[in-house]
Image (cartoon, rainbow, N blue to C red):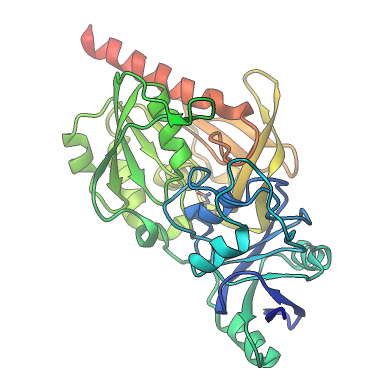
Length: 380
Ligand SMILES: NC(=O)CC[C@H](N)C(=O)O
């Protein structure tokens, strides 16, 4: 017998399905993600904290789960909604079927609902708060009330909630599937990464390119970071409203008084924008997927990118010392910029993919080149 489950949205919509994870209930902002693969990377991405993710691809769980394809050591998404989980998971790397993995991590998840109808609602009305209840004797009205009671992500500071509380070193490169081991490159650059909810593949890609990384808690003051004498500083991705992260904005402002190379991804991009006086806004339903076209204005190339954000930088509020480098070809929103008077640049989407295409991976090389130049200037 399947355990019943339901999803209730703040607009009063109710979907009946069955539980495919932990029993219990969860609330959060419901967003849709159009990636066809990479459900494990999505679940463990800390930027999904307090968000319930519905995947538009109908079959989720086909390849099971493993210990390697993760972006953090735990699941961060508040819940999961899918059309169908196949009975059998099949992949040589799979160690556990998805429903077991979800249950073991205490993730409430629902399957067997019309995710197309749900996605159309979210597309028309924008991201909505929702509640999943999994178990017997469910009261739909109570679930709708719980969805309505969720305060929403606007103004919510979650970077300091998911961040590491202790500074740690990271030196492990990307995973080599043939060798079934992580690559360990010789280290040339000292990087300090602010952890607002960092995805591990960012750290792996930096480490693979010769970075020895010190990961520091989100609220670390700039003075402490500067005292480490880094070759480069990285501002991570992360959940919640960037405008609420006043400590991060203040630290970034102080760092910009130096000429240390700076690179920001997603929340890091938004923090850099806020630090130079620009404004961020909440998008209608955001960008969550693995096939978003973005134009690189320098090369004229169109890149297919991985995306996961619900806030965006308002390009009209950018100061004069900014050069726009990337624009979304879906909706014209800002995707990247560089400062003209400092070695600082950022990207709104996910150059680290995980999941998704790797077209934007060259930005990591750009950060290395900027640190190489910084080192050369220091030496001369
Ligand atoms: N992936 C991220 O860093 C997301 C940034 C921010 N929380 C947003 O939703 O826009």
